[in-house]
Length: 457
Ligand SMILES: Cc1cc2nc3c(=O)[nH]c(=O)nc-3n(C[C@H](O)[C@H](O)[C@H](O)COP(=O)(O)OP(=O)(O)OC[C@H]3O[C@@H](n4cnc5c(N)ncnc54)[C@H](O)[C@@H]3O)c2cc1C
Image (tube, rainbow, N blue to C red; front, side, top):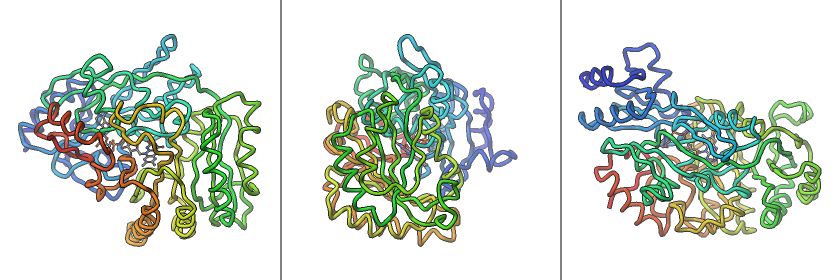
């Protein structure tokens, strides 16, 4: 295998890091510390040519290939034992064209890289709620966040992608070129090739009014019922996700309440600032707000507000569904298991995916569940591996309680764990067969299989 590394050292411009390098442990680490894998080499690609060379060397040697964008994958798909990691983190360029409202974004950029580059223009790519997340994995799975209701999923704003395929060719997929591939990339994950550049449509979003509103845990039923009803009809420029939150040491909480469990609505209003209070009022009236940080701020500030709560290196185990109706029975199950939230970083988040995201047809992109209103995720996040069993049990018990009320077996691929791999057909619904056919056309040997795999057929 050392000949593979020698070939790579001669053919790529980026660094090739192996176990003999001092940086190996840092370079092989991914966001979810549960995945302590030892690749043969981590290739820090600087351009598409490096990606092509790495794919060729890996295929020649029969090695597994892992693609890493931001490294956030909960199942640890950005690393692999004994194989090669195509690490795109150096390819994090962002070029903004304000006149066309378009951004070119490198395959290894983070959401924070994009926000940093677009905010000075008062523009944004709809992304997620933690700025360290990679654009690559988030986009290819769908991409949901504060602007989903007004601007759609991240994939709904993808105009084209440059993709290095399993056979080493680079193609551009768009509405006019390689249309099947473009369709599959928008939800089908990293199954079809390595995206070296994403081209996104930008939206007007600079300073927003938003932030968290905290309520007593005992008011959770009233808050959830109010949230369910309001988010169905609220102006699309408003978004809010529901969650559980153990109070951290912040000045907004009295010292005696630090460590108590609250429920929270994290809001974002991307409309005229003078209308913010009117828009959020129905939520304030659900129950008494016990603490809040609702104010005008740059969108990048909201997008990074919770980064410190979930640093790299923690243990993660997540489960997810899509749901159409948040039934009273589901609310009861949420409250029963939310009450047992075991760690300050753990939560269940209920993200709305109605509004603009539902104006795209179920067959227009690979992301098939366009009739669903919410994307809930039970995100078990804790620091001590000794607590793995108890925390995983909390997630599994919680999931078993809410799943019967979901009305579908499918969920958001980006919110799942490694033991959810078998759920791919349900996650894509009627689109799965077409995805398998596109996979067969572009990656018939399943070279890209370190992912929520779509088997070529
Ligand atoms: C703390 C946290 C917060 C999150 N918040 C959100 C959120 O608000 N909204 C949301 O939608 N999701 C969210 N997610 C889920 C996130 O979308 C997924 O974890 C996603 O896989 C992260 O992408 P990445 O590039 O960082 O991951 P990586 O681990 O680098 O990649 C995951 C997989 O994506 C594919 N991939 C990545 N980049 C490329 C590329 N350039 N070309 C081809 N394939 C590629 C590969 O298959 C790779 O194995 C969050 C995750 C975490 C851990």
